[in-house]
Length: 347
Image (cartoon, rainbow, N blue to C red):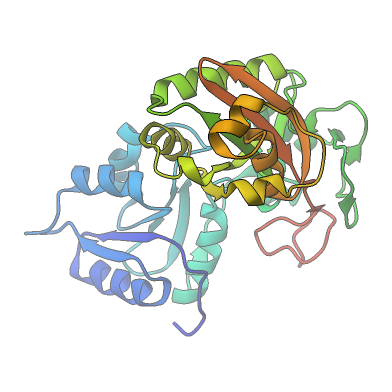
């Protein structure tokens, strides 16, 4: 148990004394929590429901059947489900059960297997065949998968020996993987805008949403305005990682609830900081009178990401939005330990 594993939000559940010993040993290395569902222990269903919502990695130390039945009621989709793994109580096999790529279960299986000298049982086809996995690449490059139902068609194509085409307006460093071609049109599109759901859309999470709003705004008003903003500008909401506004709004309850619902970070700036942002912005004498700066949303979005203003001020029902983004820095590496760029696991 000498090798360290990347710190994640782990939760272990065991069912026998032997399993509890293994769970505790692993937990001391990975961190997290280790619970027991044997006699006098926690409720299996309640534990699963709570940890499924709270943790990044769930590890069941016991039978696969117990694991599968426990998680079944709580599975939503591969973009939000945590990694779920199962280890037999003897520490012989580590099996990724759910979210092998996007949730990182395959990578965690390999790491945990090293810790207890077990065999990782990887069953995803792209891993078994040593070919490029587009969802694994997306995770490694901080690209949000907008329409995960298209992953299957892209993976099926590459598994059948065909090439997949990726449309990406930014350079991707490294050697292009086998069976992958960069082109202006393709099976996969990387970008901030919706170019059609017939292809797999990957959105770089480098965008900042600049926000201006009236006092006592309701979160639902912000949500509805945001949906209209994205629809009219064909902007992918998944590109937003940060919300930005003036410091006068730092404690606005409705705004904070809206931001928290989306899981964005929040950056606030003084009027002076916003006024100092270089560039030409949509000026409003009214906004300047109230806040001390002629524009909040555009200036805040640019300042928050040190990027380019891509969508100017959008006003709707007491809300203003703007969107800015920095170009992503992309390469062909995945997050599962591959050392080369060919799409094949090194032997």
